[in-house]
Image (cartoon, rainbow, N blue to C red; front, top):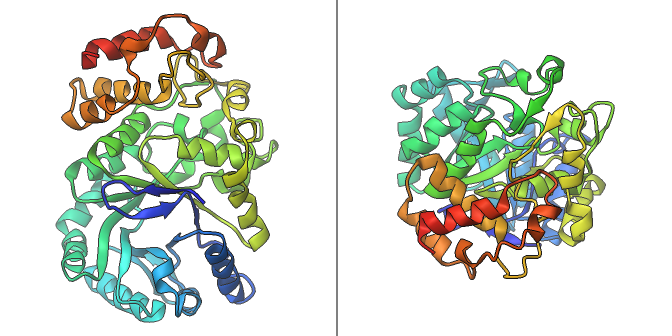
Length: 382
């Protein structure tokens, strides 16, 4: 298993994490089975948005005696009321729900306390003004949560939260179909048939800006809906009209800026093992570029997908990294010092480009790579 640092939190997270979809299987007996598998295979990060007390109790039992082996991302504002899940911003309900969650999980702290499911700017304002954010900060001061997070599907809302400086971790839906869609307060728009009826071109600019700002500001991203609820793995269900493999979906997510871990839903150890196989997959198995370039009615022409098809460079330039840092400066219309520092730490820079053009002949998306290298040399002075 490979591990990544989650933003500026310092947490070392496994690239492959666990979603909680399968925890309720077989009257929650599957929870311990999945945790045993995760523990044996180096998976140390999981998400728990479910508020069902039986699921939370089962997770607590599964972690018993090995709490230190897992990094827990669990959700504030996701509560159980009238025998069903409820998202709430009522502070009394949030407090009561948190105390119940901690008791059922049998833990003294969460590694990430995730403010649950915010897809509207008005809802974010309620979180800020209505006491939820202050409560999360209180819990962090008390050491009961180590880091504050927010889950969202809307890049406009997520960007507002990230730029506020209030959150350290963002749980966000990342896959090559959702990344084409504009911001919406209705999460169902992401997979609605009507959203894919016409030709779509390039990543939504607010989504790209969100990823780049997270990278710049040190906000780590934990990925949900990497497989689009499984639709991206099935050609008949995929909104792109073509299927991707598990490894291609995971690799796409992990090559976005600021991503630390992909939370893979699994109902059995065998399904989780399919995601875990990414760790031993070769480059050809991970490669999503050709599949994306062939998607009907979708075009990424001229847009760098950080797929590294352009490699190897005869001058050993990490073209994807140079391009990422260049895009950060374009998004900010300036050169942030953190970005400059990271760029200067690269072994090779834009100025090392000899203009041979070999990279451009390999790029599936027609990116003007030589122009980008010249621009990076000019922007960063090297």
